[in-house]
Amino acid sequence: MNFADSEVVASIMSEIGVETTNDEMEADIIFINTCSIRDNAEQKIRHRLKHLRHNKKQNKNLTIGILGCMAERLKKQLLEEEKLVDIVAGPDAYKELPILLREVEDGHKAINVLLSLEETYAEIQPTRLNSNGVTAYISITRGCDNMCSFCVVPFTRGRERSRNPESIVAEAQDLVSKGYKEVTLLGQNVDSYLWYGGGARKDFDKLTEDEKASSVSFANLLEKVAQVDPTLRVRFSTSHPKDIHDEVLFVMKKYDNVAKHIHFPAQSGSTRILEKMNRTYTREWYEMKYNRIKEVLPNCGVSCDIITGFCSETEEDHQATLDLMRTCEFEFSYMYFYSERPGTLAARKYEDDVPEDMKRRRLSEVIEAQHEVSRKLNAAQLGKIHRVLVEAQSKKNADEWMGRNEQNLKVIFPRSTYAIGDYVDVRIEKTTTASLIGVGVS
Ligand code: SAH
Ligand code: SF4
Image 1 (tube, rainbow, N blue to C red):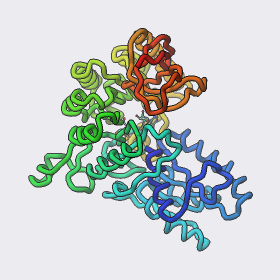
Image 2: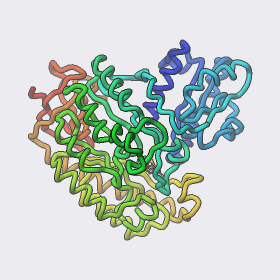
Image 3: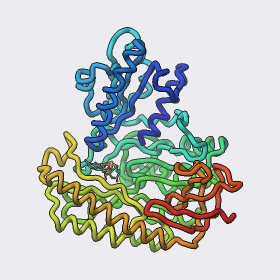
Image 4: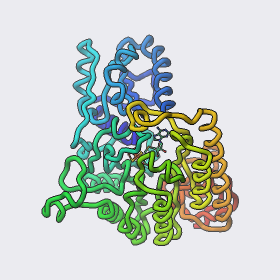
């Protein structure tokens, strides 16, 4: 999400003649796009700011801006605490950056952290940064209307808004015309995408008859993007278990170019903890939805996010999470230990009472459980053929390519005559926990 935002910012800057550079020491403006989801993400930014002192000494005209969630969360406080910072701009204020830069030129510190009910940057053509020319992100919603008790996103990124579908399709078409082969539609909860003409999210039942008639759901949107070009691979993330519906699964089934992968964060395997997290589903509901995915799309990869050590989590709750991971066998998971975020429901209502060493121990058990599952699932791919989109040179060996299969797993294979952007059928000959290794056969 942040990456997609940085591309929007780069585009806004290019309109006023400011170009991006890969050489930090050459830059006259450094914008740091921040994340507040976990405390350590914020600590990293504080650290980074310390290093930037050196840059400011070298270049007296250097302007430093903090953008995104941390700007929104800490607002003016950030300017006071970090003397180095000249600009603080929240996630809905990027279009104001040219004005904020002028204020800095006039010798002031500049801040805009107003959240919006409408801003989706729909009309902005993102400038692709560090692009491989093959894969790109397209934001389809901003903000989040859920109130998961551990999560700061609704506070830092504001109310959920869906972006005009025509602008999304146009962005996908533009990417295809530039040779891109894969797009990922991005939103905190893609299944709740609902276009009815703009503005803050509304439930379908609350729309007027006219709005209903012209509304576009996520399933409709996915179909429109899938139809842009049959060789464009379409992905999306993230699916909230409470909102995923059959229509989306049917579109995935109908279109070969919609990758068979769903990022489907459970967060915990314990219904008691899920309730405390305000995820609004139970363990049984999660498994039912998971089974439905596999019923409609037997080949679909499912990945997960897990938090260990949430408030009051007992050993039994933790075992329930390990059990969920062994039952559902996720292709991969992003796993974290709970980090209390100021202002969230959990910070206000619950005690952060699981000691850090216990959170960490549980996290390592969860990681080990995932590795075991990954090893098993990957080993079962030996001899099978996967359709891989070549993305880049393998990090470890310049003679090999790295690409991803439909399930979003990394596949490594010899270069041969293939090129970045090719779809290659790869026969799997070796596997590790994190990747499949094979040879091109197409
Ligand atoms: N909208 C997505 C999640 C976005 S945040 C969803 O609902 O699934 C990405 C992940 O960060 C979450 O899935 C969660 O696992 C993790 N996360 C969020 N807040 C956290 C916190 N306070 N401590 C630890 N992990 C957290
Ligand atoms: Fe955070 Fe929950 Fe919204 Fe995801 S759905 S961004 S976890 S509040």
